[in-house]
Image 1 (cartoon, one colour):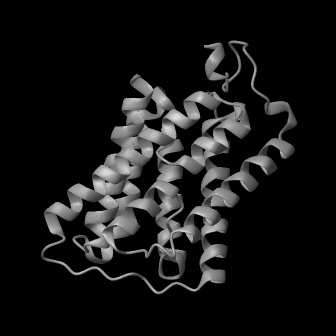
Image 2: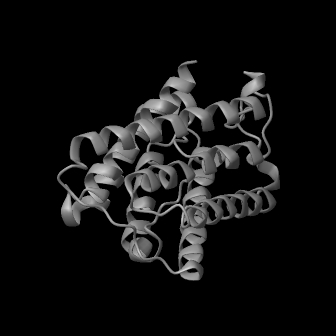
Length: 225
């Protein structure tokens, strides 16, 4: 239960920040920094509890990686992540929607899919390396690496795909009106495919990094703890 609460809280504050800072424009040009820094904060706060996924695509990646999570818990994580996203979008809309008009972004399908795929790939590849690799066990830079990756994604492909990188964020942006219902599949497909590609390549490139139940492993399956 503690892990689910952590995933809910982290996802809620990440997506509330995205809605307020970016969708409703309260952070102006500093929105990428607001989003990246709050992600750094919640990753550091909850990394020792649930590995700080806050993203269904990341939870799927951890399952494929074979680390820290069972199939049952992955779906539980996804459930609370989507719940956190929905509540965050509703609260942000309650606070700001009446004073700010939001229109759906104009997105070209192919470039947006490429942008979402590439930067979700990078995000998950970074997470696998800083949060599950034996060589980086106990490091203190994982939160900054993850947050800065998201900042780089927003600056790089924000105008192309909105740099969603997260199916739960896609739902929140659709609720807020920044994505239309006809567009929601783009970040979902792009982020999931990028996540799967990243973790498959990581596992293939690091065959000695398989999880085990030994105390020396940095990546014990959750059911064996």
